[in-house]
Length: 374
Image (tube, rainbow, N blue to C red; front, side):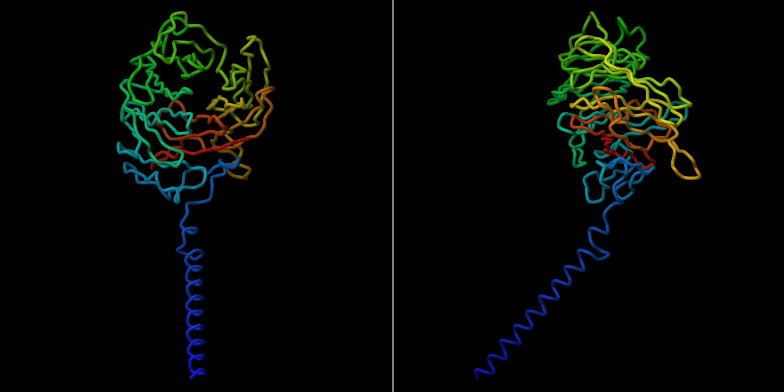
């Protein structure tokens, strides 16, 4: 009897052991095999997020068709460096696009980043601001009332500013909590005789500025909505560390030469002027801003060399990170250039902690991406 019982116990033990081995093998096959999550992820990170050359089109893994809503809340399908993918349309997870036969085609005109790291996209065709979290989910929308808004900016306290230079000719000040209008600052006046030449909206502390022809900035009021009747000017864009005003301009497009000027904010004296020679033909400057530490981000569009025999070059954006003290190049990254016909105003925004967020457009929609050059 004892021998028979011992045999039963051994048989049962071997059976349990065999089942355990089979279960482990089944789990291993699910995690690493063709049907696993790792094999259904989107493509590898675009090199723009790693300081290299980004692909010329966003991942199609989580895109919807044109006019349909892509799902921005599926992070497992997004490539690293891609924040969100939003299709064209008027739905909650879509952005407006218009291609009229007898007018300029339009897409989202501008974007900005809040102090919390959320991205705010000016979806002017749908009459709203769309807020997107760092996880790619649409957090909400804020209605806007201006007729032809083209630029959006965000103050450190989260206040939203929307600029219409063509019809309303004002900057709307919007409360970030309620979405209500605090007031509107007129654009036209001393220093701005023609509002069509305004090239950007900027906030420095409590002051609201607009830029004139990529040059000097004119103070038009404050975040409470009170207009400045004296309208003083500053010689360039204020850096976020409070040290400088910066101004960049191209001096020779074919040979790829441009200048960066930095003016000390305390003394109003020139800090430095540095020339850059990028060794490829330039089109225009796409970005000039700084992060909270003062690192300067300079983006230039041009015919970037590919390093291949054919084609020898293709349109792209080279992003430079520059030392705030002397303008020395700290690093660089090559990003894709939007080549679709839609008119936009601002495609890049610098994060407080460093790095940039930018929008890249395709026939499927808008890909919001993050990159760095440090």
